[in-house]
Amino acid sequence: MSAVKKLTTPLTPKAVRDLRKGDAVEITGTIVTGRDALHKLWIKGWPEYPDLTLRGSVLYHCGPVVRKEKDGWSMLAAGPTTSIREEPYEASVIAHYGFAGIIGKGGMGPKTLAALKEYGAVYLHAIGGAAQVLARKIVRVQGVRHLEEIGVPEAMWILEVKDFPCLVTMDSHGESLHEEVKKSSRAIFDELIGKKKAGAA
Amino acid sequence: MAKPKRPTPKPARKAPPSKKQKPAARQAVKQPPRPKKAPKAAAKQAAKKTAPKRPADPFGEKALTQVFTELLRRAATSIPPDVLVALEKAREREEPGSVARDTFDVLIENTRLAKQDSRPICQDTGMPFFEVAIPRGISIGAIERAAVEATRQATKTGFLRPNSVDTLTNKNPGDGAGRGMPIVHVHEGKGKGLSVQLILKGGGSENVGTQSALPNVDLGADRDIDGVKKVVLEAIFNAQGKGCAPGVIGFCFGGDRANGYNEAKKQLFRKLDDTNPDPTIAAMEAELLEKGNLLGIGPMGYGGKTTLLGVKGSYLARLPACYFVSVTYMCWATRRAAVEVLPSGKTVYSQ
Image (cartoon, rainbow over the protein chains, first blue to last red):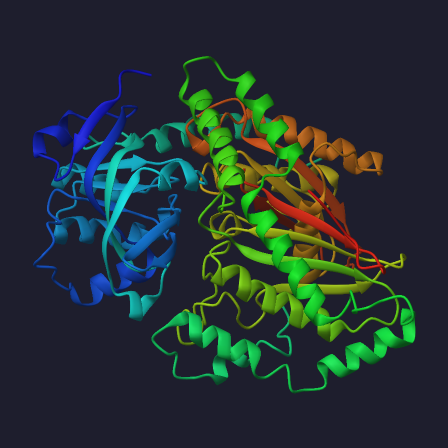
């Protein structure tokens, strides 16, 4: 792996365009979580968050385990959730709120890949199931939105992170590691099962 | 698979999902079951069995709630030793300096941190699935209630995420319990003790499970062992990295749709290094493990030599017209734990 690139939110358009598939990055600054219920809520009415800077910020597909403390919240576990479920919505979300990065796992599809190119954003893969390693990169919970409506795992948590590690798997130039792996594994799969149709002797 | 159990309509009853989750959960838990006949019935049962020796009933709701809560904590925070060994071996197979190897380093470090601090390995603490073997004459109701109450307690203490959503209202009651959640299956075992197997299965991996009917023309899969293997391999291919690879595959061929899935899921209770006593199935498991890894999907789908940590299979009888192949995918963080509760009240935990 090449040297780790350090990124600070909000990301500049140039910083985003400089990122390429396969780059290891570490993010510092404010990010927000959002997953299934929040995406649904967003596209239904595009709520505004005048006190947050979402443009250039990073959206994290994550449903954390949190504990209420006397003076706020602590993140007990906070790894990524599977991103593909947001495929129908993410392009609109990027267009509307101007996120420059999407952190998740498993990759996303062609619609999001096109949006990354059009609006200048990247998909950042975090390691699924690494909830302890990643929770330690969250230095503070700045706040939470929509908690009553959609509950702890789905709420919009506003997090301050330091050196949060990710791998660029989809860049703003139309490249996707997920497409690449799918293609190569498809060729092997076809070979392994053979081409014979059911019913053929 | 998940039948609505008696205690589960409760969350629905406390209809106005009050603003704070914790107190609501508590109320719902403590009030309804206690005043009912549960403790009395359980006590009577126990009294009949081994009354003279035991100070408190080790198979009663109260004792089992404690045991199940501890079992949930262990499963959520501590990776089974055989899974850790598999991860370490997988790490060694990858090239030094590769993304795949670095990823295994993080996975292994993550399991160490989780155990050290007794915190969830993964934030998706999954759907608890209890498979309980009981001695004759024990109250099944007490076990079911204990599993629900233990899930609530483990959720309250942060070992589990509030992971149950009421699908009708889309509300999360915040206490981890709901209709059919947790899953509790009880059957009569042979021993005098009560033994429990538990898995916590996350949503990402559950989503990539499949069920198909043979024959499958596209794959050239007939109604035979070869056809089954093709369908399972296709499920592994389609999952790519989305189920948090490298995964463990449970599969079952035959059965009806519901039992087929359940049997596939029960394979996840098995240790990765066991050997299937049926040589035909053992050969299928070995071949699928090898071929699955040849796909090169790798950890997280980044590409790499290890796509699977294990493949475990089984089969059930089928109707002449049916030939289902059910495949379930467990993420690398295979959360599994077991406990044996002896009549003396002694508990033996294992993973």
